[in-house]
Length: 333
Ligand code: AMP
Picture (cartoon, rainbow, N blue to C red):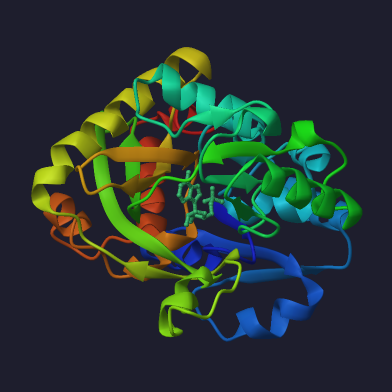
């Protein structure tokens, strides 16, 4: 059986882990990256594609003997329409992709789960505090901006329209900017072991906002939030029960709203305030790139496994357990 993924995001970790769990591994990647990926012994086959249709054909080659692991770059790279045409089994719940692409649906799911979320503003006219304006899809924060008031929101939106980053205002989400520190809580919902695991915590390293503190405070530069990497974190242990409760609420709500429910890795991207509040401003319903930090396990994964367990390997382990107990259908869609 092949474990297959797209060459980007967390593909190295996914295939490294799959190999450790005894799978054949296959990578599908833009042609100009083939040389880079060839250096890794744990990748059995590499397909370089010229265009997205060819990528889809390669993925569908595995409809009988492979499982595709989705990550944040899958939809970005091959497009939502082609993703709907994937015939190969996908690890996790493919029905969640549509929710992930729509910021408004996303926030409504979190709210329904009883998770604290930032205040949201339907129109620039309603803005009465510091806000962040976000674009749709996983673009790594590109085009996002922070605005102090409604005038700045309107100016920023006009700029996005003139740069053709958006077509109309409905595409963006205007959210209260929560003051605190970011922490991204990574989980794995195991359908096979019937338990939720915390797999790690990271912080995204974003340019230029994370560089501004290096400047004297009288130099004023507008922050941008383009993700370029990740930094490891652990949380105060007293925060963890709340974090875990949020994870459980999330799993229960996804089960209700998006059958067959949450399968495998997900992440609750949060701001922790000085009141100890955890405010979740977005979720990812699949492996996040911040898990790349923990290729040989995180401070949390060791508590569950006592062996090096990246999230990539955890996916491989779940697949192996599922196959060995004739339950593969429970973890793929
Ligand atoms: P996102 O693409 O939603 O993960 O947002 C990109 C970055 O913007 C995050 O990593 C945070 O640094 C920041 N951010 C997003 N939403 C909020 C919020 N509501 N309050 C404060 N910071 C935020």
